[in-house]
Image (cartoon, rainbow, N blue to C red; front, side, top):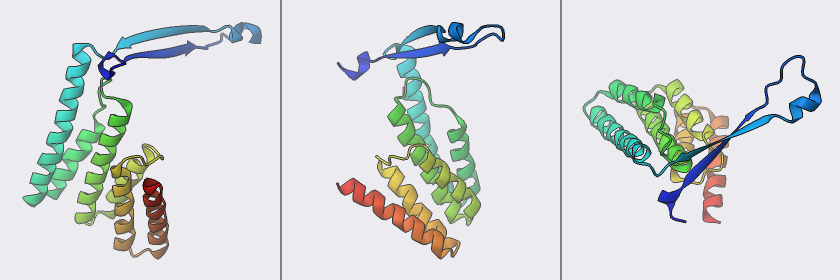
Amino acid sequence: MKPWFLIALLALCACAKAPDEDKDQAAGSRQQVLTIDLTSEPYRLQAVRWIRDVRQAHLEADRLAEAGEGEAALALLKTTLDQQPPIGVGFGHRQTMRRDLYGHAARLALALKRNDEASRSIAAGLAIDESGDDPFHTQLLFLAVELAQAQKDPRAEAAAQQALRAALASALE
């Protein structure tokens, strides 16, 4: 099946139980199925717009940082991260793009010597998905090593280097 014919089924379980219902009735809860056709034009347009907006945010943040306006660049990336990706963006793409945004924000925060901000961005990016199947996961681990070095924390640096080695070894398998 071609990807643009993807139809998502979302199952919503309504398992609410009134206080006077007994346990046997709760087991027979209603189930409702909602079908969403992600191939429809509005979903595709929303996805394309969001991807374009994220790309523009990266470019504008780089331009601002080069112009010496790192704080504005960081604020722009944080604002972009606050926006929810539309439903038409695939789950894996959504995770990858958000992880990339967190990495960009962490790099800027490190350059601005805002270690707490960098730490939050790195942690949020790594928390998206623990599998680390994309290069942005590895990038965040590199940034974690840089952060530990900037903080002069040998234990954190050793832990970050160990996580980085494990991710690189896993990628080579």
